[in-house]
Length: 513
Image 1 (cartoon, rainbow, N blue to C red):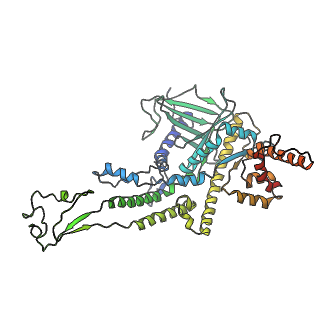
Image 2: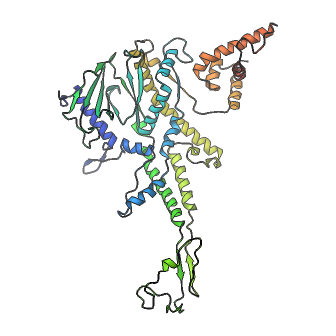
């Protein structure tokens, strides 16, 4: 049956509208409108997701101003003149957006909810979260899809999804998601799939065309698409089972820096190309015009000079090889080109990297290895700005994770933990400190901050380590200490004591004595 795409707000209408927007966003034809005095005309001012993905993959577009006769061999040299900077701009934030745990409405979960931790492990959510954050920071949006328990598992499945395949529509008044779509091509079966997420249901459509319809220039659902009722199903509740993680302004963190990245790559190519050309110096034979050299008349003559031998091969005379011996006319001199100093170009590239770090709010040492030469005050200022940007990205990602966990618990029937207002993300540290720095900090807050807070917030232990391991080991240490004080004489290493217990004792002694 042909899908109806003309009735507003119908399933087919949402499928077609979201599919068109997904295709245009991926290709980069959507954008803001530029106002002029005479007319309002659309303009492509935002790059497509495919272009951003190429930058992140280290394959930015090559320059087009190449002579047609040189295009094939010259493009290989152009590729060698590129430096892959864009992923570093993304990882500068995502590497410090690791999720440790979740707190929910469950009682006694100060160190994280046990059920949430179990759900994280079943879904490998720490790894999935990093993937979502990479999509969010690198491409402007990331997504999660929550699938209810079925006959093969008794827990909700959470997957990380790319904006290259997913898109959502939000209510402009409340911001709530009203519809979502995931479209992809199954290369094994040659089938195009479309999963339409609506409140309380998932509608699945398929297209068995000879070639994929997902990459057409002008995408519109055609009569080959049909609903797959066997895969379509209802989901508990009345929410859309797709969650959007939107970056600041819905833009990638590299989107505003593409011109700078192109400029840096152009300078790197110029410096590399000059060095490549200068590996073969140009040479010439200088002969005074007023001297008769070996019967050639005035100078060596030229090809049209009747005094120049017809078959004289000067290129053969001056062959470059280790055993070559050149015979040059009396009075002649050999001229050789000099190298161009590329130091100013290298310094210019370093300056561009500094400007990029400044405009991108990144610590300079992340993209320039010699940044340690800068002042401590300047490094601290950059570090603070980077921390502010990181806090902003964490704040934007946290509601998405709360909504994702709430859906997962609701689909599993755990309504108490499904309260989205009570779900809190336990983030990893923004910075890594040495053991000496952490120990000194623990000593300073001893007696002021609770022991378990010191273990997690100061010494950097995972909440799961505190609840599952450190409490047991610490209780064992206290027992040995009490037995020794009572004169029991039990050896410190007996009854299951281990070097690990001694290590924990050393780490926590600054906290609780």
